[in-house]
Image (cartoon, rainbow over all chains, first blue to last red):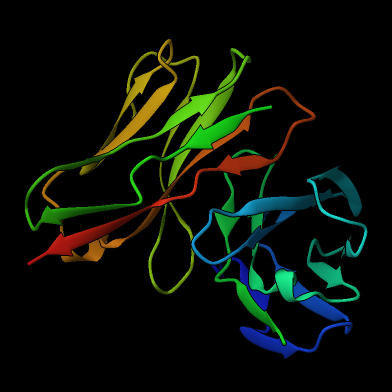
Length: 111
Length: 116
């Protein structure tokens, strides 16, 4: 049984560019949440997707957007990248939002 | 708004000994969930243990147990018989129970070092 998978593992982008990160949930899960984890910090909630709609959003600007597909996989898009967007981006999946299972993350570096 | 505080940036424990990691939280809610997650250098967050606020009994998972003090808003993690593989960042997390509130709130983490 495959767990949560994320791609790519690492990514380097330049300020002002746009990036798309991908997540496939654990088998049987229908909900995907995205978190940003800055170096030395705990994960910060970005948003959650359920039934292809954004269900809840954290304190992140509109530059951060997402999508969930009919197979429950999800994308996180970040536009107009800033140096401060450099972080580990974690995807977590769950069934009914209770117990979240995390993926290995995508390390984004903005130069 | 809810907050989670982990006041110990780093802890060390001798192999086979016991260590306790502290976590306090602030909330006005009566129903919620609390979690401890482990994040090894491989980066993948792994659920260690969870506690439902309505349960008075402290959760236990093998060598891991919690001391849940609801009135004091304290949720500490005890690791018994520490092993080298326990070395990691440990995060305490809070989630509201009522439907409509889905986000997890994490503390800043405690780095646990296990000494051979």
